Picture 1 (tube, rainbow, N blue to C red):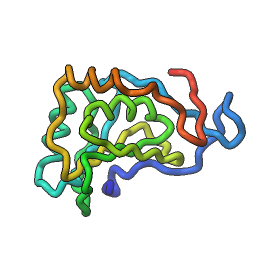
Picture 2: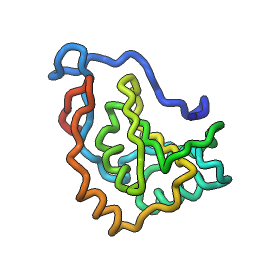
Picture 3: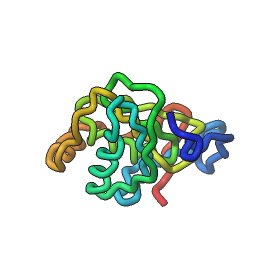
Length: 153
């Protein structure tokens, strides 16, 4: 769970030019790591695991904005929570959790941050070769339900 200071921005989703009525524009391309904003939530039950993961992700040039502690432990490896503005960023990040990641798309999320909740089954991030191999195996990102792809800015 995010803290109040870094809670995801959720609100009315504006109409997107070029999308069918009621659909939201989704940025499905994967931005560079340096252009990917992340908020880490330590839901592992292990003290400092969130800070360690944040430090490691920074070495891959991700922009880690915050590290918080979840009140509850997540049983899995990791959960990526993201909205229409970060579909491509979440797609890219899943390769950093090849042992199992849960993708949680939130249509009404309007921020440009991917929340990464680290669970108790997380062990370590892969090296860059393993990340590249995992990325190569991923299907190309697609627009989630209720969205349509919009061009990169």
